[in-house]
Amino acid sequence: MQAKDRYDVIVVGGGTSGVAAAIASARTGAKTLVIERVGALGGQMNVSGPPGFAYANLYNERLERIIGGIITETHEQRLGVGDA
Image (cartoon, rainbow, N blue to C red; front, side, top):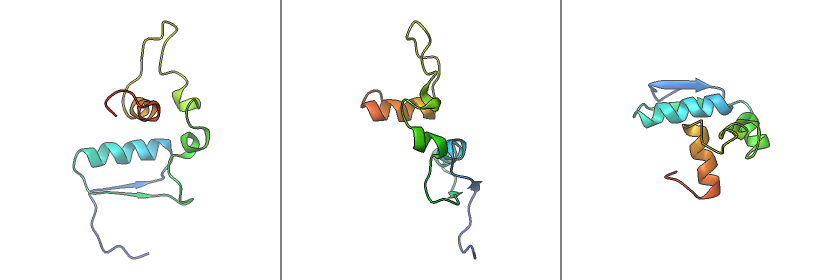
């Protein structure tokens, strides 16, 4: 593979963590490249999806949201709520 472009950040692995890292990087304005060997992003989150393991602990027993960030954004976007 020959790279012709230059990137500020290269994320190797497009699993759940790699996707979150790439999104965070791109949001800062960094030119970001994700390299994933299987051609599908999201890893286990892609396979299990909501309400998969990544979404299992968004809320506590009182139904208060206790986790934020990208995982919450993807959950709310799927449900059509929030600012996502």
